[in-house]
Image (tube, rainbow, N blue to C red; front, side, top):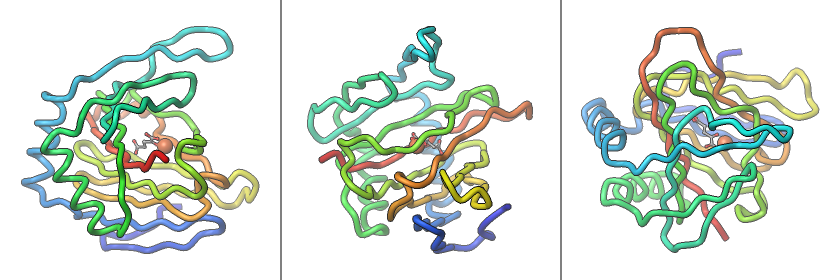
Length: 199
Ligand SMILES: O=C(O)CCC(=O)C(=O)O
Ligand SMILES: [Fe+2]
């Protein structure tokens, strides 16, 4: 089911709360951030292990943090860079809107439709109980799929537009999984920023 029209939406689902703001950044700012983030980020291409076999992660990533604490997920440990001025400005705007504070941001660069992010939850212990995660998208829009772990009729998809903000909160990371699936469509790159608070 396609949720949310082209206006701000606040959605209460079983065990999750989502806020979607399609035009959080202007088109001009979004274009500029897409280009500067693509060119100026120290992108890394990590290996992941799945059932004992090693593969390249199907996207590039970078981690920024306010201190030098590493962040670990899916057998990968990332060392943070210090926040760039662009990322600080984006973080301030996201914090002001979401009434939350973040000290870390994970960047994902999906180079084309073959790059992806498999079903997962952001439920690392370092994020604490019921984390608020703020997700900013620049570049080609992609569907964000999310599915409840046990309520099988609770499966949704949301197109994350260029310049949009999605806030996930409540119990979502315990009860739901989310993914960015591969697509055969001939699409350009997408950069996603997920702001988190490591505690
Ligand atoms: O690219 C996205 O929209 C989602 C990214 C994500 O789920 C993550 O980095 O944990
Ligand atoms: Fe995630």
